[in-house]
Image (cartoon, rainbow, N blue to C red; front, side):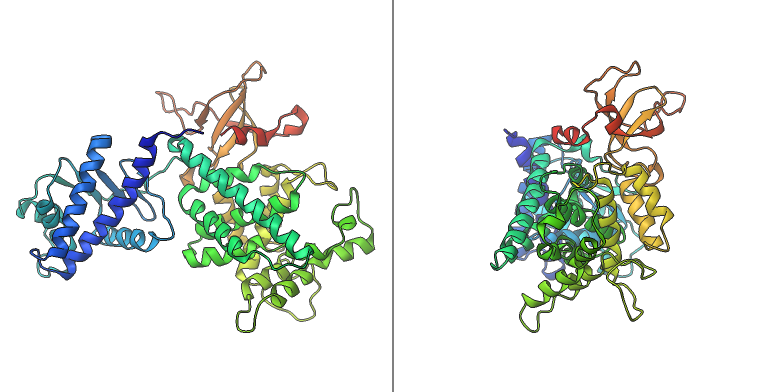
Length: 480
């Protein structure tokens, strides 16, 4: 797949601007304007702004509560830049502004002066009533516009995602599946599991959830029916991390959650294959053997670690992910307890993916929309009600992968929820059949689109069963 050099440059310059800007602000807080460190930081910042103007004829940085965009493209958080990214975002938010736009090129001295004014704005006591824009004007800085802080920056991943981004997300998913396959095979053969590869896979999934959540969620529809255990573990990891991100877990917490989710079914290594892969119903004895995978998993995770490095989160999730909040389910408990927080999250993700995935013993999977209804119906007994609400807000009322009839008579597949929480019933869809029933390779569009009179152009009438119409849902995501 060929990717335009401009795409590479745009992503790289966005990250570079975040780094250069924070270093300049921090240098201004520590040193006087004549200091060589601040001058050097100003020189790098001016060069980056020049490069952005050469590429896009613009240099604009916008900051929201949990997002930074440069020239309208979301800056991706990498592990090695996460701290700088977070510090810059927090600093700009505390300033009460929405970012900066460099309307013309600036030289190194102007960049250093800009950094000095902004970097010391909150510590220059006695004049807090003077706006930052006015302070810059007083300093003779004319080519920088202070952006007003507005509402949430709405990031439309399918509209802006380029080939490089989609390819990277696909690689992340496939790498996760390969890692789980290697993990389970090494366990069966008595070899040490590839822990460093597991950590890297989870870190990559967390990265994608934080930057391209809707795209990575779409990948959960790409199930390999020959390897359901592997894809299921990756899907549960993605769904769990997405839910954790929604409720505000930190990056480190998301990593711990993702690791526990990826390993939640490791105990199935000890379940005989004739039971694990049996087509049709299990006997009572076989079902009791299958249920033991939760205990097997906890023991495996404990036994492979050295003293003092007990994987508490991983062990608890492996043991508890089939226990319900009312403590029904399995394994059977003899003493009342409170389920761990991560187990409650993984339990929801596990139930959703298992219910919507065809298996050798379950050829009639539940539709994603119906599975959302089941989560709501069993909220408070099987699932934590607060977490269920948050999970639905991640997936939408009509989840990714659902096939829908629209009021126009057209048929569509849900590709991603709308970024705004107020539009849970108006996701982004791809048209697959015209109003006359003819199959089409239609465009992707948002159900929030309205006509000149303010009426919605399309709305969902009902959810359809794709199997009844011979529609292969995953193939539409593979094309994306």
